[in-house]
Image (tube, rainbow, N blue to C red; front, top):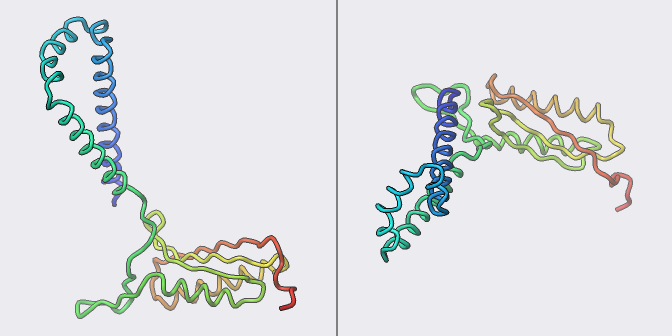
Length: 191
């Protein structure tokens, strides 16, 4: 989604929310009788025109149905605007009009994580490819032993990430490594 479309979407969402908020407050004020105090003429006109409709037998069912429809639309709107961080397949270099070379986006990240997990001092690693602010990011997360040399682990992670990006042949793929330290050392335990 481009910045213009995102800005328009946020503005329209704000405007719709404001209209619904004012409409809901006006409905509560009308129901509570406070609308007559603020706008004497308007309260009488609303009360005379809507009193019969509110007392009709179908009104409760219609109001409930409208509430359910609005709730479903609101839930759909929220789910449609959840940030999606995963990526689809990556298009590789060499793709042209004759065909596209596509690769599962997480496969190279998982392979890079397996290589990093084999490094001394690394207890385990996971890899995934995400989209962060419109950029494709190869993310490696590793848990290191407390006794591990973090400079060596970070250098290995940078080397593995650079090799993976080079193999993909795409300059727009960025790397990110997150290292965490385990609380207890497992490397010195006898098995």
